[in-house]
Image (cartoon, rainbow, N blue to C red; front, top):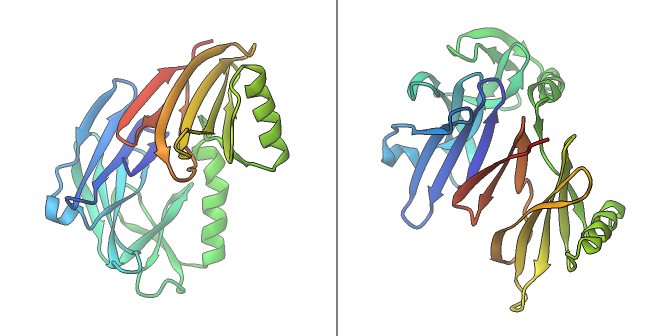
Length: 258
């Protein structure tokens, strides 16, 4: 799995899966209420040159590339998640972010020019001539509203105060050896810790531990092994669900019960 985007309004996930050896890319929508998954029926030859940008209000937004060597995004394709049908496309614009009143985009050929506001479901231009600073502020203001029911972990690196505190907590729970980085998140009922330990071959193992509010261990899993470095956002929490990807290929979901 290459990338996951959370649609908090429609209670869906958008998932991008890439195989660089075969030059294959597939995109999926996942209904978290019914645990139903649907593949977007995109042409495979075209899909490799697309990427997952975002997901919101029942739509999945894909991007193309203007300059493949530089990774420059160009083009917006909006797919309706419920039907997997393309709702609209804009070939010359590039996605910037979501604001309260719509989707912000800019002309890919002139990123320094003013931005425009699009209606998310139709692509219709609602406003033009928006300064970049105003666009950035609108996206930043909407972010906490959009993700009010989602929790992403905080990353603490070795040497930082909070890293030492969480490592000490893990050691008290007989989980010694945390190194390099720890990701930590908490809800009213659970504490979730993703951490790294050194294996015998000097590679890293990414471990995940879940504790209840009283500090009792409820779950311990290995997310990946044989790693040469650390990652970030190795899990997230949405409503009462804990989501993580094991070995980059298996999406697992656990209920965080009271």
